[in-house]
Length: 80
Image (cartoon, one colour):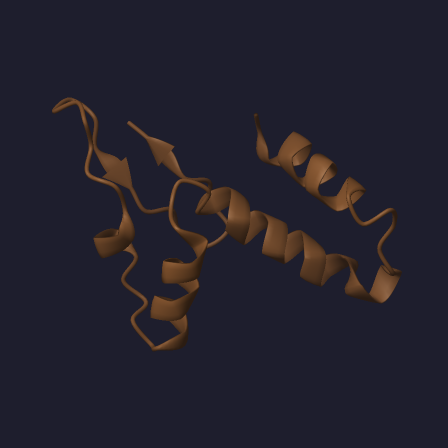
């Protein structure tokens, strides 16, 4: 599932979003999509405490050939 379908599904749950709040909802959806494999509570707690390093929150790769990539701002979380 790509970001567009993820956002569409998530925003549909609100049955409409006010125009002035749409960008905030979209940014939250982007954050949730980019960090969907992490524990959201732990991730937000670390960010609020000032630790911006998310690498320690990423799950360890199961396959030795798979590396975990922390996305740049606005990017998508992916495994190479």
